[in-house]
Length: 297
Image 1 (cartoon, rainbow, N blue to C red):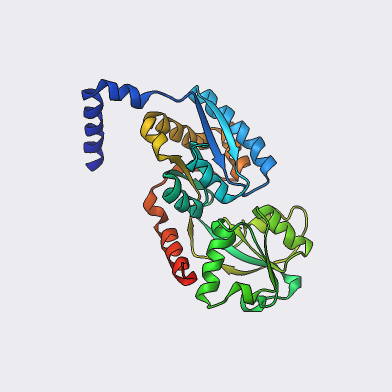
Image 2 (cartoon, rainbow, N blue to C red):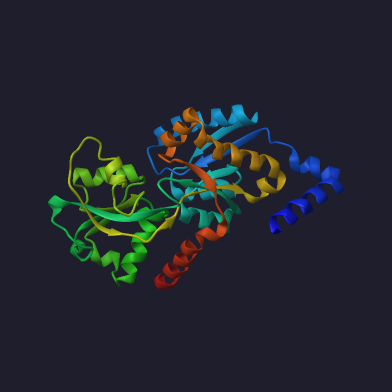
């Protein structure tokens, strides 16, 4: 019932103010969508361009793509209005919400509404617990990666483990793929990366191991993490609300179109996009507060 009242109120306002209707309903000449470098940048670029072409044909607006060098780079790009929309991680969305006025619209759907963070090693390393990583070399993805840093750090802090003293060395590899490859090459003894399920059957280590038949050991799996969101810059939304909604539903509809559905699968390995709300990321915000308190920030 509340929804019907909202729609009626919105229609009344627009009809009562024709100039507002025009200002709010016009479409932009050019739209830029940003991506975080969770996977190989060239691969993202190729598939991002294909997605842009599809959206351009559907909406009649030119699209650019922007691939940031790191996770925080996309936040800065939105803050500086270099991008209008962005595919963020859960953590970078919380950051972008505060710093760049990001508004969540959609979320990625893999096997369900959540994904997970995992700490993984190779069985040949003979490590069978988090405590067994003491004195070992550890690999992260990025300091702003939700599954590749943020959740593992919270886990270590809850265990009263100081990573700087616990590991012999730590290193960031920039993408989940590069982090998995570092483990395969023996550059590190264990890594933190994502998993699409809580059993590890669809983990990053499975996806990026290629044809190497190696035995992995999952040492830890996180609580469910809200799936990565697709966001808009708030001031862009305020200017182009109707276009924003058209783009949202064009993206949602891709899951029902075989050819274009493959674009989303190629881009992120996802089944589609669905509606999301800001409240769905409250658990991430709470963890941010916890880590800031524990770190003395």
